[in-house]
Structure formats: structure tokens, C-alpha cells
Length: 422
Image 1 (tube, rainbow, N blue to C red):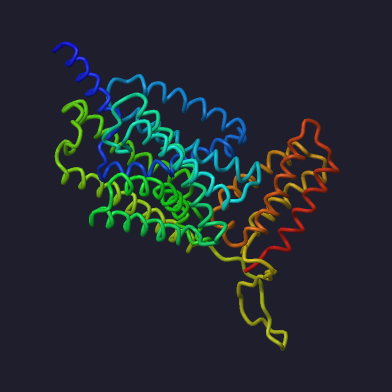
Image 2 (image 1 turned 90 degrees about the horizontal axis):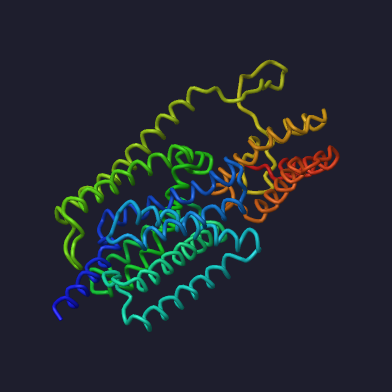
């Protein structure tokens, strides 16, 4: 009897170690990992050139492999767990993008669908296990429900976040304020007695759009209201902070073992809060410093100028002059028009290989600017996006046709000129 009881106790103790304690550092890592997941997926799709289909397949396969390792581990191992979270972030985003971009499902519908799916997961989970508490993830089946719910929250968070910042044209700056405020309100509700399980899952869903909005705020150009750090530097910054916090978790687990259910984090709550605050300050401080250096560099660059003359024909001075076409709210599209003009020149000379190489710059620039441009005028953005896809398809065909390439570029160039605005 004592042997059997000991075996059950050991199995229970082992499975208690599979999910981390919900601490301040947990939430910081969760938000930062969201941005890492999204930017890395875009990097593989566009910069590396794998395309959405290959990227989706590769990331899904890697996620399955990581989850197999996670399920086979005998205790909570921070680096494995957080690797799974990052990969789930990528795949959850890809699922939503597949519905909206490939199948053409509206963000309103996809948000409702994923909300219903998450509700179904919770209902089945509760009926099977009698609890949704994170502290009760102590069997393989409960962990399976847990990861299913996590994947759905990322898909839902992506759809809801895109709905707010793109379809409703709130933008990523407002997204940071809105979703950050909702998470703060959820925490206040928890402090005043709201259920721990309910508030945890609400906050978990909201951290996905918050992380994405934060990432866009740091990466987007100043013309779009961002800090212009770029995806690479932002990803490296976030990854460095995640690496330090996860390494600390790994050291604590190695030294002190996994904490029992409901116990405080090793070192106490104050130490955990201090590390979480340090992570936030590093992201804010380094991000602001890099942005300030960018502003200083930009101020040294001379603005494009033309000579203006007074009515008597004498030179009146040198001023910056631009003739926009204020038919949309997309703003200055010159950067894209310049690339299109370069590609058109190569195609006109029948240098289709050179055009194919140069059009890669258009694809990367357009993808990088999506978060800033799309909320301004979603309809016109989608029109241009479709035309850019047509250009990419024509130039990347197995046997590209000069006439097809020239025709698609002409349409795109005309639209860029028409939609260029202040």
C-alpha cells in the first residue's frame, strides 16, 4: 500500500513540475515571446523567402517536435516550456493569417470562431477534469488540454488584435494603450476577488495583441508613429531579455528544484518582481536609446529640396516641396514607387532576373510597413497588396513573360501614384 501510494505521489509530483508558476516574470516573458514569434515567422516567410506555405509547414513540424519533448520531460524545464510557447505563438498567428489572408475570412468572423473554439475547449476540459486551474496541470491529459487552450488563445488573440488595430483602424499605438489597459483592469478585478482561473485566461488572451502592438510600436517607421528600431534589432532585444529571464528560471529550477503547488517562487516574490521590472526597464531604456540615436541620425540628413522663385522671377529661397495626391490616408508611398520604378527599368531592358532580385526589396519593405499602413486605409492597402502579389507572381514564374511583368508593374505603379497621400 505504501509503495503504491509513493508511486502515485511521485507521479503527481512529477506532473506538477510541467507548468511554471504564474509570476511577474512569467507575464514579461509571455508578452516578449509573442513579438519574437510574430517577427520570426515574418522573417522566414518574407526575408528568407520560404513563403507562407513552407513556413507554416516547417513551424508546425517544429512545434510538434517541441511538444513531444515537453510531454516526455519529467519535470518543468524552463527552456523547453518557453520554446513551446514561442512556437505556439508562431503557429497560432499563422492559423489566423491563413483564415484571413488565404481563405478571405473576415476578422470579425475569425474572432468569433476562435472565441467559440476556446469556449468548447474549456467546456470539454472542465467536464473531463472538473477544473481549469493552472495549478492543477498534473496529468498528461490535463497538459494536453492546457496546450490546446494555449494554441487557441494565440489564434484568438491574433484575430482580436488585428480586428482592433486594422479592421477598426485603431493602430498599434492605441493597441498598446487599449490592451495594456484591459490587462491592468483584469489584474484589478483579480485583486478585488474575481476568479483566478477566469482572470488568468483573459489576461493570457490579451497579452497576444499587446505583445504584437508593442512590437509594431518599436519596429515601425516614425512616419507611422513607431520608434523605427526595425524588426531585427527589436527581436534581438526581446530575445536577449527572454534569454536572461529564462536562464534565471533554469538556474532556480536546477538549484532549488521545482516548487510545490501554490508555493512562492524561489527567492521570494520581491526578487521575482525585481527581475521582471528590470526586464521591462531594459526593453524601454534600450528601445528609447536606439530610437533617440535614430532621430539624431535622421536630423543630419538633408531633406529633398527644390528651388522656389518669387513672382518677380528672383529666387525666393530653398524649401522642401512635394506634390501629394491626397486621395487616401496611406501617406507617403514614395519608397515603394522608387523600387517599382527600378524594377520597371530592368524589365524594360528584359533583365527579368535583375527585376526578380530587386522586387525582393519591395516585398520586404511592404511587409515591414504593414502594421503602420494597413490601419490607415485597409481597403486601399489590400488593393495594393494584391497588385504587389501579382507582380511577385509574374517575376517569379518558372518562365516569366516580359509583357506580363511589365503589365502588372504598370498597374501597381499607377495605383501607387494614385494612392500616394499626405
